Image (cartoon, rainbow, N blue to C red; front, side, top):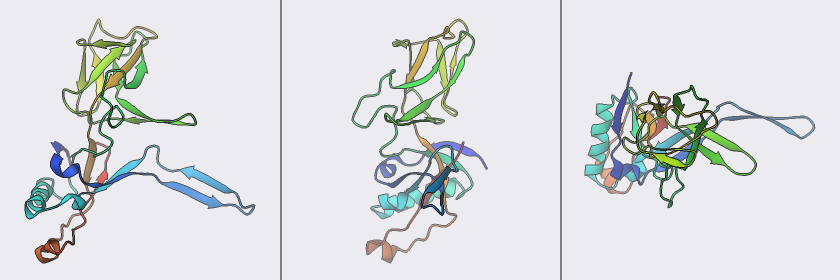
Length: 210
């Protein structure tokens, strides 16, 4: 298996259904209370791209992409129609959007992350597939135009020698990103008569660790 740095057709991904899911064990106790345990550290996203298909040409585009990925074999990039930027929907992305670390004068690599939360809790989710050319970095509130690179296959920011953040420096980032996924089926059932009658085939995707 491999991960193909190829994005699912954008015009189709923008109208898919799906989103994050979690796995929680819940045990009901004899006193009426519950014990709850989170089995996954991070949520895992699922999508159904079948809901985006509007024409036979759309169906063929998915079929072609499916064949090129070997069904479930190879992963690929997918743009979440809602959650695809370091900024909230409707807000412009800036270099101050997300905290990714604090300098210590020695560490030169930092993983892109995105925070989700409120006053009660916060979750920081690693971002492994930023969009090339979209990553912006700020040190102590000042955007940097050089001195760093970002590996778009892993989401790791690397500061060049002489540009490593000094101790206590706040490092923030802005970026667009894709979700790493694979097809969650090895079969696409095509029935043109049913399709023309309005019955859309289910074509599931599931998030993977790249």
